[in-house]
Amino acid sequence: MAAEAGFAYEIQYTKAAEKFFRQHEDVRIAYEDSIKELLFGEHPEKIDVKRIKGKRSTYFRIRLGGVRVVYTVINGRIVVICTLLAGVRGDVYKKMSGLK
Image 1 (tube, helix red, strand yellow):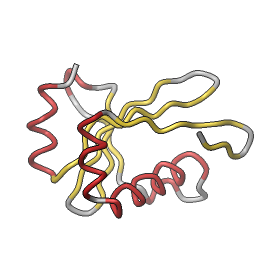
Image 2: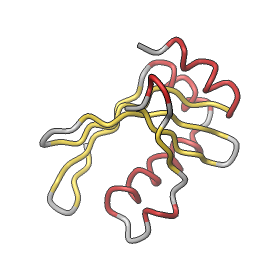
Image 3: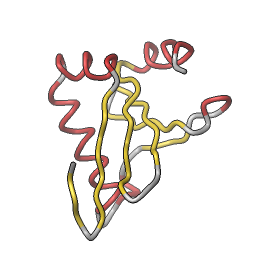
Image 4: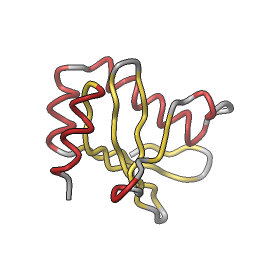
């Protein structure tokens, strides 16, 4: 858990996301840097993040080159970012149908 500017945040990973990030540590670092920029940065508009349309409208995706990371945010005293999926563009959107 990290804390900055008076509030804390935590990034959690599903098994599918953790498996991808074990093989792509550079993408994990870029993703965590992007989340930090969104929460505390001076230029969060530089992060390519979009809300997923349709039934999964509570999910967001961050584009990191050819990789997409799908996540959701759970609000409370601590912001918990639950990372659901990560992978190349086409694969991530196909795998989303299996999410709860």
